[in-house]
Amino acid sequence: MPGDSIALASDHAGFELKASLASWLRDEGYEVLDLGTTGPDSVDYPDYADRMAEAIRTGRARRGVLVCGTGIGISIAANRHRGIRCALCHDTTSARLSRQHNDANVIALGARMIGDAVARDSVAAFLSTAFEGGRHARRIEKLS
Ligand code: RB5
Image (cartoon, rainbow, N blue to C red; front, top):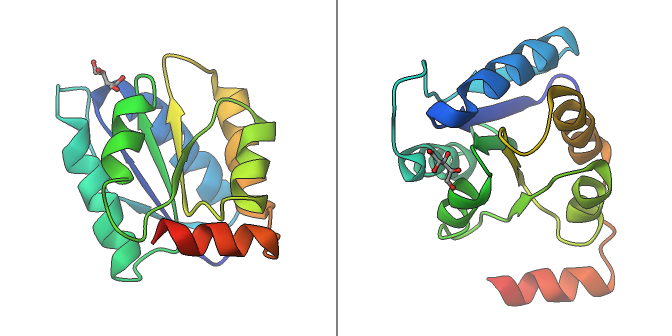
């Protein structure tokens, strides 16, 4: 919800989409914590997934958005961290279900896979959907 801090991080392939999402989120009233990268020069996506995990672990942000070319590498890297449930999403349905069923705290997007509008709609669904709990809570427990 607006007022919460949303962390964003990307590699070079996701840099433009991250910048666009950051500006849109600010317009929507969210406080944005931009963890880099800061330009189009080539970087390694695990370093930015690590930054995201640290921001979530220390409570600097409750939710995060990661972007790389496909979303695959950065989501794999993020999910190596305890306490991170990162969902690679390509549409609003997967984004919504990642919250309802998986209590995802980070969404990963592929800048070379989806456009700006789908990315925004997916992030909007991710941020506005609650975890359903119930039988899903038992499964989340088993992840940790
Ligand atoms: C970078 O070229 C690209 O490999 C990276 O952004 C990502 O798609 C990896 O999964």
